[in-house]
Image 1: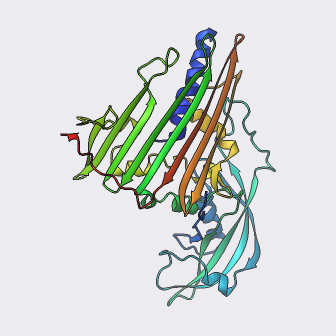
Image 2 (image 1 turned 180 degrees about the vertical axis):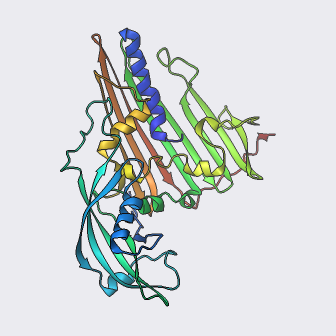
Image 3 (image 1 turned 180 degrees about the horizontal axis):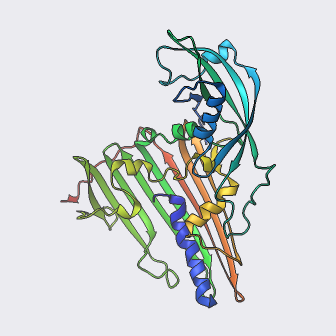
Length: 378
């Protein structure tokens, strides 16, 4: 479940690769993020701009190198008063002015070469120069004559790279402590010597503070999927107990529950209630994504990194991979994630292909209720 867009895709794509080797080788508002001040203050405007690149743009995928900056205009008193202050500014700090600055930077990435086909080519040097608009705010401190500066991250526009402040605001785990997550996956594969293989998987996770219920319907991993597709149903009720989690599992559709002697969800990365909240939130950092009209998506040039992670960096001549990951934001929280992946390969006159579509929705924020089943056996 953790990194949901990788798990079933990995199984499906690996199936096709292994088979080949065997042959011879929504309504409501969207973003609520209004902007954010830098956590630190700086002695000069240039230092604030450099800090913006270091703290908000550079990440695991990208390193941003300053090229130039250009002042577009100054912020009016009205604009300054409308800035989202949060709890960053100290009580002795007063905003005395601000500028709208275009920052030009060049970015480099370590993910420029992966042995996969049909993915975005590395941009040329000219194409790899980007511009982001940031505010540089002048600050006066009580009793200090020398002014300081903070950068301010404005609301992102469609096509912008994501900033750290925006990403952390959307993924704030406190926003997901009470919600319902519903996942569906459908996949198919075509391999030599077998009929088309079709699989599906669904699960529901209901989290309500110190209780959770998970209902899973998925392919039985103990059965050879190339021979037959069998499914298993597992329901798990969990509740917090003095910092630990007690688990009760049912394999008969909730008719009977037996207390688990071990953690049955460890394989999904669940060890505490924080994991229930975060297990399906995006695992890559902000620098992998770009802003869209309704949320954000994985940048095309990093699709190859995503695919390489999903299938264990399998690739090479004759293998074609393609994928997408789109995330919809509603009321400042993720409401929907959609992933799609396709693979085709050929070797020695044989060909295989696989395709999977996944969807995960977050809903019932603040209204999800989890009741302890009455038929639990301790």
